[in-house]
Length: 463
Image (cartoon, rainbow, N blue to C red; front, top):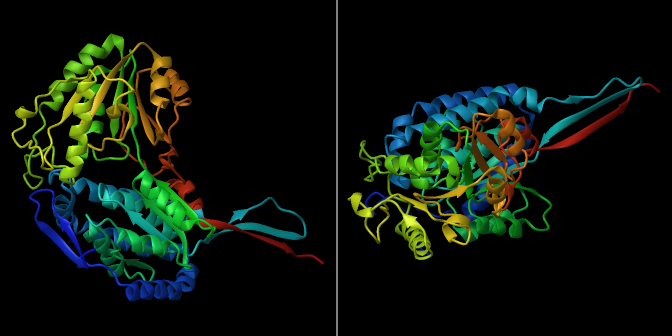
């Protein structure tokens, strides 16, 4: 392997970032600094941790234009949308800071004469956060900020596609006065990352990425009795009931499918539409997708950027070719998108009908600008299809009947079920998945429970 980390921009294939991989000596030094800081940071009052975090959030937000431009070039997000991720980081970090003191407070039990009893939330120690490239700030903030607020030290390892994101987060906290050693980044190879998971000081691993990557984390952590949080793949469904607001359902579901060029773990990858609305839904969806402008991410007019790599685009092209060969209908002509070019990262969006679950495009994560739309006759058929997946991150229902939607949502196998929206994380709610979408929880007050351990105090006060 090269001694240099190189980030090739999907915009034009140029090398945008070069960094040396961390050496074994640098990894060891980072672990030593974290160990030295751990006891001190644990004793810092939560209120003071919150104050430092708020200063870091402000420092981060002040760099919005710079961070958005870097994001655009590193992973291909259209520049018109890139600032939204910076604002999302601020929203989530601010919420976790807002609830930190209450969420981390001692749990007081009912009075028992002669005894003092309480449960305290102890930090785990050192958390290793492994973040992906597709939403590099939004995925990292879910674990990094609450881990710090809970009194843990953090090592941040970002994807080689987005290494500057790790550096910028550490810069913001350093500017805010975070003590040395509490938050550090390392640019690591896959092999060195696996080795770091096995290092004794690491007591928690938060990983966002592929199912294969999650399996690697589990293997590396096996026998260490440390906690792991895994947010893995998704093949998230949307169901449009017969009573849905059609225009809203089309606009929302299509945005959920194609935003970020479909490169979202909780993006909509399959849509089930009641037969009464199916034809109109497809007609409006195709017309809407046809309006996307595929182009360079640094062009303010672009609404659909390139995929992260040419290989990712070819994977989606192969899924579409295979589905069409099995009887699916492709509704959009790639020639209508001048930038579409086989062998490149630029891929025209596609809407498929005539699909079924025997097709890879309906059962295997696509992570690209394609969606299959399938006709259903009612709730039971839709439910069976929504749950017919090895994944379970989110699901969306479109309906004007909240009672019926809640009853249906209760039977959907997913960590989050939306009504009349999709592809959004409310930081007040628990972010979690089921089946191969992972385990554990981030965000919300529940997320703090996964970054701390309970410690009971049972004092007999009268003798």
